[in-house]
View 1: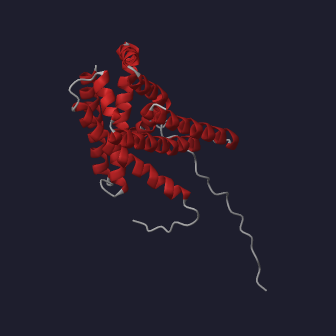
View 2 (view 1 turned 60 degrees about the vertical axis):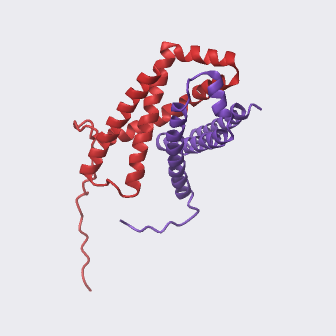
View 3 (view 1 turned 90 degrees about the vertical axis):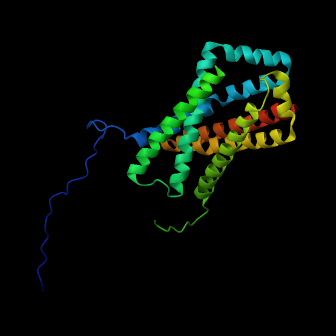
Length: 135
Length: 115
């Protein structure tokens, strides 16, 4: 009969939770784009009733159309709409980028970084163009 | 690329596809609609109402609202699933979101067809 020896093992070191942000790591640019995609989507969802309200006003009657014009002439409402315009355009451009990544276009890190910059550049430029045109 | 075999009821896959299909439709509609707006001689009530009196604008516009609400449902539901852990609270938020979006669809019908 062989002798059974019980080897008492040292408790294995458990994985330690590292807070990457506490370590001083910053969110990479594609990550920043991604979280803004969520933030812009949430913002659009929250303000959807305001947009539907404006559409309703604009189509109801000539008088209601004038009240719609008054609302959108209000500086605070304008700022809000400008924010929504950016949210729509960012969500739009970042969404197209995600769709392309879904079909394996631009998956590599250098391309993903480049496309992130393109998304920011295009969405901000379009916000500026539409914003100025509509102001 | 890993070939995965999707099993079960594949609710996740269905939603994943619908989220993308609605996104593509909204991109196309947005671009066409911007050109429709640029085609207006002037932005006033009569031109604006005339644009929305076209059956095609109403039909594709309503489809846009429908796509938007379905897309928003999936996106907002994902947000609740990521950040809200207690099942009861999460379920209440899901229900609230769903009913809200269903209400918006009804509102859009009223706006577009003046019921």
